[in-house]
Figure (cartoon, rainbow, N blue to C red):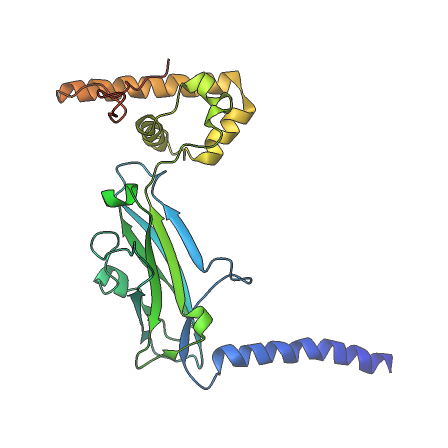
Length: 260
């Protein structure tokens, strides 16, 4: 009896695995779905270009799709389309490379004997992203190869922006070393750090402030001062003023960026 029970326990998981496989690969209708994590926590994606060097004018988000139905021995094309989301919908050619552009459409193929692929969604660094967060809601388009799949898996929404936001931890010892905050100053620091492969985001600022490591802070202070001297020298060659914050009503000239 114990032996029979053991065999039953071993066989059942295999049967369940077969059922899952049938649903994915041998379902009666061939359809396509976006692939999410187990708990569907990634149905929306927030992407920011803020921490990329100003030289970077494009950013790519990869989205994955997978089939439900029979696997075929030939490649199958599919299409993605944009559907309305709200007031700040991303515009093709301005905020992202059009979904029917060859750079994107060439990836919209389920390979022969395969059941999934990844598609690059290529965002463009338009200046409007510095003012608002824009939204690109994607939907899988039905075609001759694929019918509409499970509705909950048919759309994926990406929010894209390039808005500078003061790190919450800036005033926590960080300003003692690097001075008062300014958007232009922070953008300059991001670009300078990016030149040596460092992403100067909220985490970076927070850790540097929390550690309060004198030697490490001195290193970064010297680094930013040197980069600022180089930047101002380059601006002088072009007949430009030193780096300043954006003018305001209270400060028409704009505060000079320094690390004093």
